[in-house]
Length: 138
Image 1 (cartoon, rainbow, N blue to C red):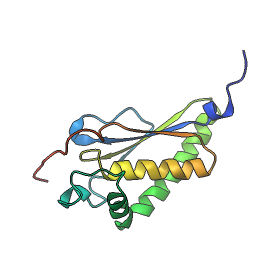
Image 2: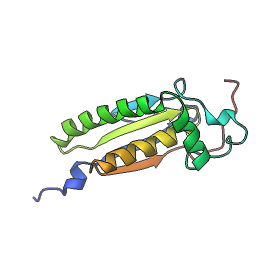
Image 3: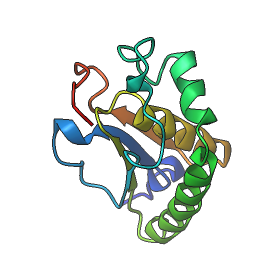
Image 4: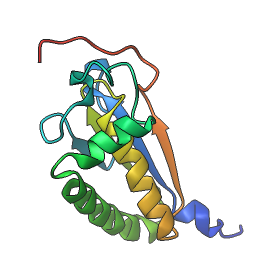
């Protein structure tokens, strides 16, 4: 039996999701962003957009604490990756926000970019990005 290619050994899956659309996906690390970052959905101009739009992306990155959250998750993911790489296993990190369309999308993409810059093959999935905006009283 041949050895798997290095990118198969080092893959990290980063997923975004919305708590209002169901349980978090199975993951080694789940980050709840609902109470630590401003919600762009509160701004009518951004409500129907997603974290893939530049103005939403920038709004999330401009929120105080965003880079602290990202730095902590990046370091934890590095550690998980090193531990799992020894056993030829993949690591999954999931970011959750209320609807899974704004904050979680931005942070999932930012984490993937950071890991890719370090040579860690990463795939990103946005579970709830296509779902309608959830209207809540929160």
